[in-house]
Length: 467
Image 1 (cartoon, rainbow, N blue to C red):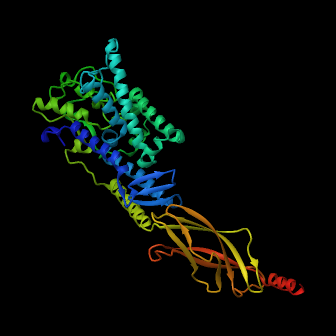
Image 2: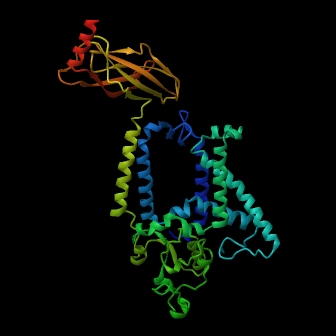
């Protein structure tokens, strides 16, 4: 894990990861499978696109599985690598690197060098104020682009750009775009690393998930010597002045390079985001002395026992099992996605008697075409030949993505069940299908048919005989 051995420092590796994350985040909304997005949660169309499959709002039973995978995945990742997400994948960190290291340091020379993040720009020089303003303007362009990319996961890019052509008709979208961009600018320019230190909820829960095998940026006190007392106070004398065997030369380059302004030699701290800048700094200094770095990306147990990090242990294996089970359930349930939806509701009237043995029940069928093609729908009563369809008499046409309500009347052609004392509730199965693709699109729904008791039928018969 020593970056000096492979010639590539962690900072360069992080930059590569940042570039990949950025490319994926920007490109993913534009990638489609069979005309559907990889991931899209559209509030406008009330749809969830997941790996090219479209799920209607009524099929969002998948969301709990996605949320479980998200939270268990966070627990698993934190148990393995601590706040590795914060240093290597969090947008907050990526944008801070862009603003602080790229714009302010490398482009505008507002800061002297990347390796010293503790030294603030001198704003007594008026030119630095101008550079600061230019830096904010440059980052604002990036913020508005990032805000648009974020919205692409809720509003498809093709819709987003078409909406911009008529902004007055889509003020809500423009409002979200503006607010997200402004919040991002305030966060990165004003709050900066204070968000990671004081506001990020992830930092508050990470200590609960840590154990002695969690990998983190860790200072080898056995080699370098103690810099802080057990109570947390810094020892006045440097390690080498107290112990000639201590290897830490107290250059404090690991302190100056830290974006969250901590001293890693103090031990595990909530503010550490595992960016490993301190590892790179110590590697360079100790490498010049012909020694391995005093700070490494390892675990307390590995440092103490001089063994390899234990990635697979009871806790992590448990997380892997849970993630595998939930993911398998997600695939199984998601694979049963229906190309049409049908909701069946009964009207308030239980039944209507049309003859001595002819009884009608009224329903409202809500058909929804979740396919990308237009279809014509029909249905049949699967398990009771004594009930016939009175209305509708023909197929129901429905264009792609639309829904329609249809009043349906079913009639009993002969007496149903033992109806001497009370109304009889008869379970029936409705099988609906696309008449143009009956083998591909076919679903079943359960409902009931209510048949009147005998005294109601007798009363109806007496009334009509007297007439």
